Image (cartoon, rainbow, N blue to C red; front, side, top):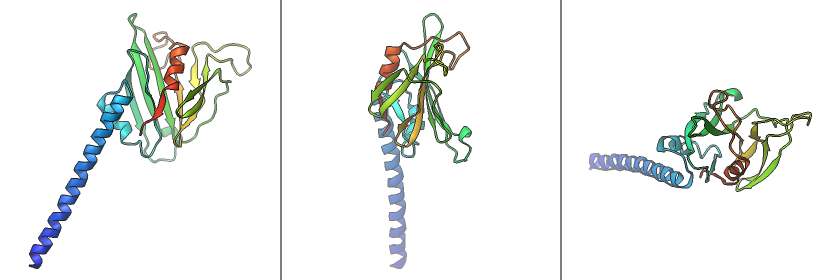
Length: 197
């Protein structure tokens, strides 16, 4: 009788563990599917990387991107080392234009070791995450000349993780092979940001 009770108990533990693993896999698949519907431009593999870390890091994603843009790369380096230069999250979106040039923008998440830009913001964008200060072709630190082809936000917060957006000419390709994203589209991208939950 004791052997039978032990066997039943052991079987119950194994079945419970198997059920928990299957439920976790199902929950993850559902979360990825929901995120793919809400946030355009992703494939399943790229979204899976972000869903895997979303409970530990706040991740802002645009619910609107200009036509033709896709997520080119998701880089996740959160290895637990103290060196802030060796950690971070980067989500790069890009689009090839008919003339062979490229447009791209990137969201960079920093775990530590960040500071503000030297430039004054040119626009304040309201989003679900709060106000975002955008430097779109700002004046240099002496306020004497405009920094052409320069677009970046000040760091903004997403549930405890610092993020910045940039779309400078030359990001992600050879110099001269990229073109700027217009200001109205840049504003719309930033205004559409929501946290991946």
